[in-house]
Image (cartoon, rainbow, N blue to C red; front, side, top):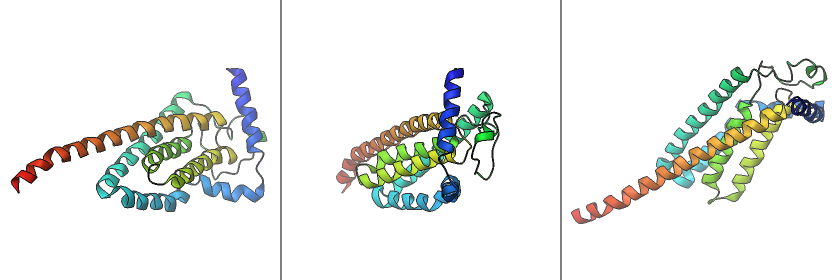
Length: 200
């Protein structure tokens, strides 16, 4: 375990120190949760356009559940593991390019990586049959948000990878829930359609 932690520290320092002042502003923008609001608005527009308002509303409810779940689960892990962030860890923070606005206390696992990957997996599976380009855009966005946590100096690679795996699992699970719900609704509509036809 000690060897794995040491490797995690070394990979973090290598990736983190690849940055330079010319890119600091860009990656701080990417890592800011409010920066993605216009992108979220675009995704909501695509939802209503491609799947209809009833399905879009149910998807948005599941997205709210998903983001809350990943965020709260990340908080539970952070309080449980109490692993210091690299910007707090002696022996690491001295060599870290810390460019984030602030540094929290505990970092395992990354809520940013979890929530963004959950959204990528969830919406990517919904959109893939309609437009493959938007799926690649989602993947690129998710990877950039996840990597930004290393760049700005607040998460180790293992924090980010764990967050991506957990978030991806939650996103896929809720996609299956959404798909089953949609199939059930369509089956119910087909079953009652003859009743209305007979009435006419």
